[in-house]
Image (cartoon, rainbow, N blue to C red; front, side, top):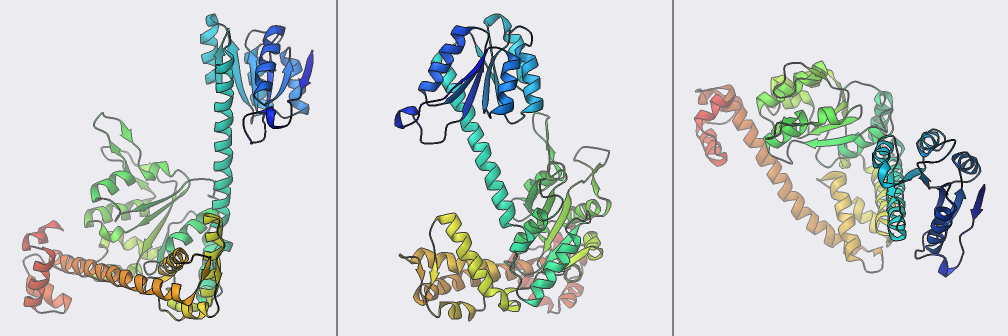
Length: 466
């Protein structure tokens, strides 16, 4: 026997405004069927019922069900066999098996075979409803996550790169050529020029789009934390904590800030890139790197190697495909499109439409943006916060630009200071005990070199650190 009872409609049909999900109950005991149907319909769920497994499969062939509540012990085909058939024919459905106290081991076995949960008889109505709602909530979260991931992939695909300018059009052309390649890639350009977005677009537009995309920044943590996050480590308890070389699987690993690493770690990274393999800490055998590696640099590898910002151990970067990402000042034709993209994304993220007052775009375009696209978006975001009605005026933009220029100037000063520190340190390390030679290499006097060493806390003994 098999029948379907439709859930009542209207405000009294349930306690939620969300659409109902259908539930199929399978049990050869009439009293169990009637009880569960009444309980679940009272909660507003659509309910189907079947007195045996074959009737249940016939019903599922014609109607969708989100959850199947099935007894384990049934004649002809038992609940375990029904579970296997549902997993084969309807993999999107969740199966909850119902069993008596004496069959708990069988229920646990069913969980390992793919069941979502189990219930012990005699059933308690409140527990049944709670388990059903928990599964439906999990399904909704998974559905929302899947939709969000699809939206994020769509927003980060290659066609979303604003490329009206000739320079950015050339970048997109180069990326299309290599998007499905296994070869490592170098993106170089100024801070804020969009390298991170481009790396993500490359990933989501290629064959690796369904695999993980991970950004690992050597500047965002201590050197030890970065090394452990990339290569893996042993915990104090002796367990192995996987690094991103392993966790990224066949996805994309975007590594940035490598100039902050010491010479040893740069050389180690260079060997891994060149051989497509690495030796985990404490291990002896190498493991293959299946992820595609994308390296971000602030300048071409040859320049970074010549100035000492990169050690010779990373010379391999020169032989890889290198794509230069132009600064915003060299792609001004893209500025209207970038502003339009910001307005579109802002509406999606904040649920609030933005419009530009007359001549605002001219004022935006007149600025130099030393912080590049990142600074432009920060200016627009701050201007949006200043606007009460969603219209960005020249006053909003002017105020936001003044605030941004102060922050950008400080950031650039910090970056220049860091660069000078690295130049001095590398010169001292390359010329241990020969400060005159280090000074000549830097093009400064010995006295100036001493002043810079004091400024950055570099001692003569640092020459041994190389």
